[in-house]
Length: 87
Image 1 (cartoon, rainbow, N blue to C red):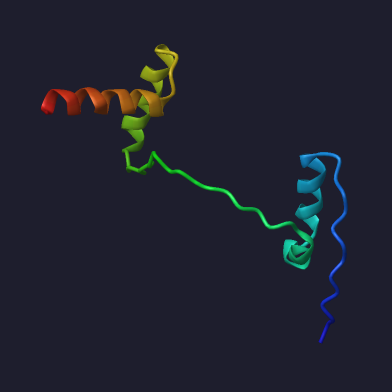
Image 2: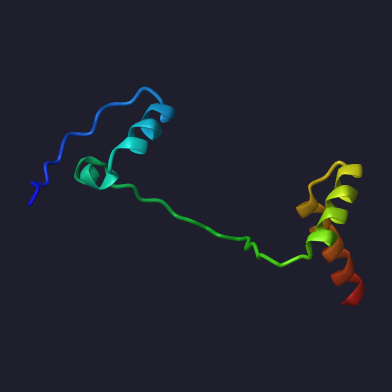
């Protein structure tokens, strides 16, 4: 059985160096050398995934491009309008 040898965590000059390092190394081998982080998370928005027919989505994307907005923003705007009118 292989020994679990824990190496010290190298110092990095940038986030890119850190991510490159962990692309080729197991983070679990360095957990003991990492500082504990405490932070609060305040989630105020929720995102939902909704299935949309492919042909319909192509039309929505085309319309969104003409309005220089994302398809997501356009759909959200349309749904807000419909919800406001229905209320």
